[in-house]
Length: 126
Image (cartoon, one colour):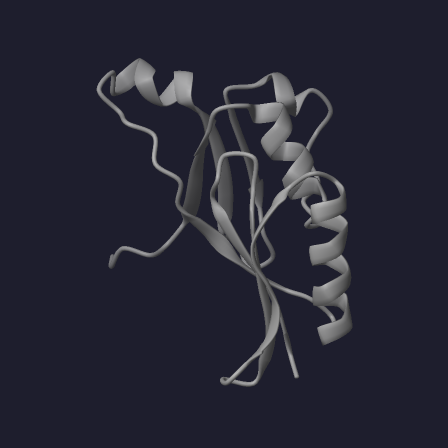
C-alpha cells in the first residue's frame, strides 16, 4: 500500500480559542471539545483535520518548539463572501495578515491569522 494523506494537524496553545475560530469557518465540534487535548473532525472525502494542545505534543516530545504554520485555504461562495468573512473575523478580534485582493490567478483572496498565529487563506473564484 502506498502512503496516502489521512490527517492534517495543528498544534494550539489554547484549544477553546482555536476551536472558536474554526467554528467560524464551518467546523462542527462536539460539546466539550474545547476541554480536550486532541480534537479531530473528518472532512468530506475522509481526510481528517486535528488540533493538538501544546501540552499533548510535549508529553511525547518535550523539546517541541511551537511555530505557527499555514492552516489551509478555505473556499468561500463568492468574492463578496471572502470580503464579508474577512471583515467578520477582524471585527471578532482576529488578526488580518493580508486584506482581500483580486489575485492574478483569478481568485479573490485574503489571509487571516488564527489565535495561534497560523495563517488561514480565504478565497473564491472571481
